[in-house]
Length: 355
Image 1 (spheres, rainbow, N blue to C red):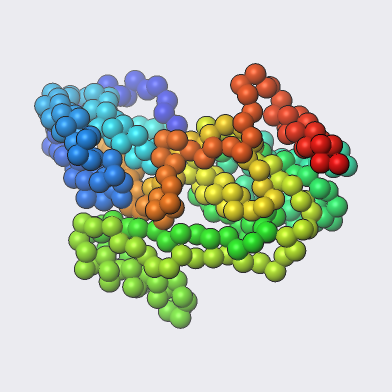
Image 2 (image 1 turned 90 degrees about the vertical axis):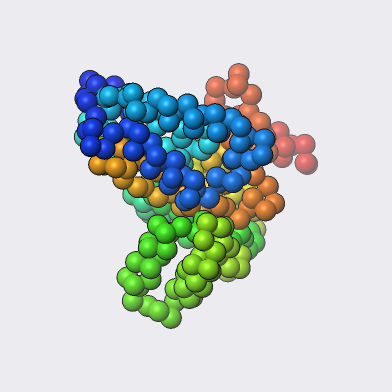
């Protein structure tokens, strides 16, 4: 969910380049979404097709009349909003010049990671962005505080508002919540010319051709080439295992989650749901990680850019979270202002009841 930070700008009234106007830009957007988006057939079904066709007809009628970048942006966004997927969106170059990406906006912030001891029984850890810089900070904290963690029964891991980023769960984060093998269902990828070109480029750049992931990527590329336009599975499910005592402290880990938790954060939530230590507290997460591996494509003259995912998460074979999110194990009511205190009271009450 690392979209550009939209800022009001007078340059939205800038005239479009008529050599590459809104009609051509829209046509390219529709073409790429139709061919590349892994969720297209899930979103455009027999039931939704009439509404989709009506929208396409409407925006195509209006696109030739758009004379400014702002007018065209509105039309492009109306199209991408149909899919109700935060990984499908339009980026206007004016945001790149005048604004910044979410990751760039986070670069100067110092409040994205926090760690402190609440009392002898509870520790508090916060991760508000899933960018590589913040994940490295979390790693450093976990390594530096191994002794403290090993003697503290409860950890509150605050993920509220973490919309994702450019990193994945680190080994230290996985070890923290580990009680048993963590399973990662294999993904499906949409076959397209763009995917094939990117996969070939990736394989040529790899020096270690003995790596199992290299062989997996080669097999997937071959299957993709043989199945134009289709979703192709990338192989067997994967597992992550560690030699860690599942009874090690912290024995109880609370994930604080809300509607602001999306993308890579939802992947971490999924990992946490497989741990016997983790309990989700709060409200439903954003519900965006059914589709991922987002790609960016310049449209027409580059005034606009399209982000679209060509991968579909393997967990959709068992469940879907699209626009719903992961539900918490323990719902925190809207009237509760102090979620950290709520979690502490919950565990204290539960422990007393268990005695």
